[in-house]
Amino acid sequence: MPELPEVETLRRQLEAAVRGRTIADVWIDPGTDRLVQGMPVRAFVDGLRGRRLEAFERRGKFLIIRLDRDLTWLAHRRMSGNFILANGGDADQAFLRARFTLDDGRELRWVDLRKFGTMWLTDEPETVLAGLGPEPLDGAFTVDGLRASLARRAAPVKAVLLDQAVVAGLGNLYADEALHYARIHPKRPAKSLSKAEVARLRDGISRALEQGLANLGSSIGAAPGKEMSLRDHVNLDGEPGSNQEHIVAYGREGEPCLTCGTPIERIKLAQRSAHFCPKCQRLPRASAGRTGRRA
DNA sequence: AGAGTAGCCTGTAAGC
DNA sequence: TGCTTACAGGCTACTC
Image (cartoon, rainbow, N blue to C red):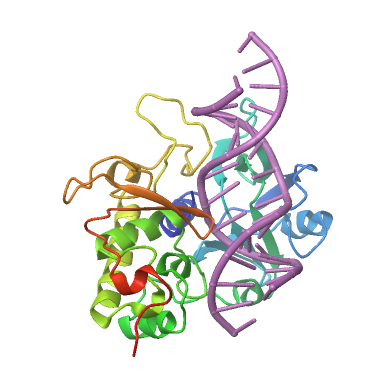
């Protein structure tokens, strides 16, 4: 699923491939009625047509495309949104929800099986991005800052890591990976973490995200020899990333922990799966019950 | 205000 | 074989 590494990989590829091009035409599938946010579809289409793609940025899981006339085009891939660059007029594309034809005849295709993806066209992008926490690969993402955020929360640390106000860009996959690297049980109350544990968590987050970036993202459905299903992340060329080959926790239920060999367990937490090694990521007795820590 | 959860969506897989 | 149900999950809206 698209999290920070998948969105950042896409950003880099878009910048290299289409920066400076102009949008010649736009088509939105009428059945994808949640795609355009904050304005009528007609206004979105009219507003984008003729705009130049000047810069590609990212904030959390948001892709930010700066246009001329001080306009900003934002896209959020949510579960299954993919941008694929194609030559115009190719054979039909499964799950095609929108098409952005460029002035050189190529087209950016928005392909989104689940139709959860969203886009905005605005001169006030900060409104859309309001409430996002620090960028985890920035120097501004410090141990002290993370510690202060976690100290206010009694909820399981895994659930808190998914809160984009605490740190921007983590999703279910990289949160599991980060907690495994940090050797912290996903159910630990966020406020119960020691300073040393928060430091390990911060490093684990960086490590998981950097590794995802180095491998052009994780594409869980991409088994060797199998046709790419478009159920999850593909890159601008339609090809999967390779980080699924380097994952230590997510989706590895029953498989041996790469550190100690203990089978990875899966539990339901915050309405989604959490994967962890019961030996490397122990739950202290004080955390097993309520919020722990008796003063 | 923090925490928990239904719902959005659709294809795949498991169960009967 | 064919139908039904559960599941995957980012995020918002809602309740307690």
